Length: 443
Image (cartoon, rainbow, N blue to C red):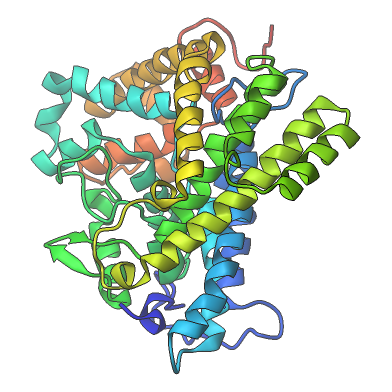
């Protein structure tokens, strides 16, 4: 793979349009970044669960703040890569290489756009509904389309959201550049491939293949590609942020004590720093008496360390990555001290954060709410002529009705609507359709 192809600024749906010189205002990739920032799906992330229920008096992360932080870390990773690539590659297009930080940060902004409400339990609720109702729904679609539904994946849905043409909209979706779209796809293969995750639904297969072939991604088998190199940086930025920030949120909520969180963060430096560096950290911890600020300081220096180590891991595996060889996630290739500390963080996160009572409660609520909405809308799609179902289908916004589409297209459009809901809107729809509450009346 080569960077001149990999950083192609051609836009999906606008391939025939001339790429204008926009250096006076914004580059092509800066336009991509702005399109995500100003989009409705991005705004809705502010009301979608990250891990903990949406905050009361203590503000913890939601999908929006998480995505912004991932984009910040991704930009740093991209900046570190630029100088190294210029030293490694001769005769390379400097202007294109300089855009890597923007491309990575844009893909980071978009990486969670496809996630349904209520965190990862939302994805699981969708999979479970179709699996449990196979007798009713499986005969309506092809075998490959059915696999898309029972293995529903937020990563694939993000690619769909950004590329599909909705009713009354332009072709190409948000018309992002090929380079940004490819940098978003962590799993560049369809749902039929065995494994836990995948990168695109059958409905977006042709778009992905067009992008992959134009960029020169390595195809191992039919429809199965190796990653765009920048995917490794997007993935690393996400891994760094959610692992490290969840610990800080748990501290703010009183789930983990200050001393314990300090220990978890300092584990990333044990037996490695010299005395002067430890003195600098301790001096700051003495100077800053606010416990939340102490934790924020330690979190910041841990992230900085991980950014440096993930960048080094990319460069150490540069040739393999560029040749399309299989390489581990960068977070698994960091320094042994950091790797050991990260493993402890993951164990604590599973034991004390992801299985915390408040987290389990929001997940169980998500299962009930999403399952009920799917049941109502799927039955309406199957039997649209009854008076009740006809009214249900009228609740779907025009761009999601897909009147003349196949059963698969109708089901996917309905999933677009439900997955795009915020947590609170999904709860509101559930309450109204179950007769628990009336529209506009709040308790």
